[in-house]
Length: 283
Image 1 (cartoon, rainbow, N blue to C red):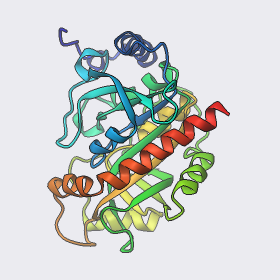
Image 2 (image 1 turned 180 degrees about the vertical axis):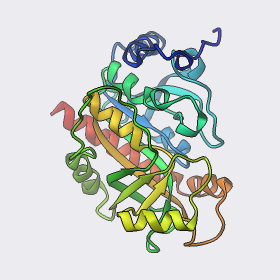
Image 3 (image 1 turned 45 degrees about the vertical axis):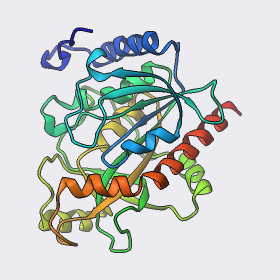
C-alpha cells in the first residue's frame, strides 16, 4: 500500500476525524467491526505482546492514517488485532509503538493511538512504558502500576475548553484488578519529561521533590487524551534503569536488554490483565 501523507503537518487537521479514518482502516484490515481493549507497548514491552493471544491481523503503521513507522529501537511498527487468550470472541488492539513528543510531530500525533482506540470501539487502554526509577528498591525488571502522573512536558493533547477531570485518571478499578493478579505489584507516580535527552540528576531530584517515583518520556499525554475520549486507563511501567544520579550512566541499549530479560514476566502479567479486563467487561 502507498505510504500515507502525515496529516499532523496540517494545522487544520481534526484529530478525532483522523482517528475515525484510522479505525475504519483497522476494521477493514482486521475483519473486526470493533475492538474491546487497547494496549500500547512501550520500550521493553515488545516481546510481551506475543503472549496475549492469537494475532488475527498485523497492519503496518504506515498503512493507517495518522500513524508512522516505529522511530525507536525496540519498538514494532505494526498495529495488531489479537483474539484475547481465554476469550477469543473479544479483540485487543495492540499498538507496537507510540509517537513520542520529541519526534516533533506534535501532541495530536502523540495522542492518536488512544483516540484511534476509542474510535475502534475500545472502552479501556493499557499504557506501558520503560522508565527510570527513583526508588532503590525498584530494580531494573520491576513492573510498577502508575497511580498518578506529573506532566512536565509543557504540552497537552487538548485544545480549547476541554476541561477533563483527571482525579482518577489512572483507574482505581483496573489497578485493583492488576494487584489481584499479582499482589506484589507496587504503585508509583510517573513524571513525563519531553526528552529525547535523559533527565539530569538535578531534574531527577526536582521530580522527586514534586512527588515522582518514576521518570520517562511518554504516557502522560496519552492518558490525558484517553480520559478525554472516555477510555478507562491502566498504566504499567517497567523499570529499565535507575534514574540519573541513582546509578550508572544511562543508555537505550540497557532499556532494550532489560525488557528482553523481563519479557516472560511482563508478557504473562499483561496477558493475564487483558484477559481479566475482558472478563470483567463481559460480566
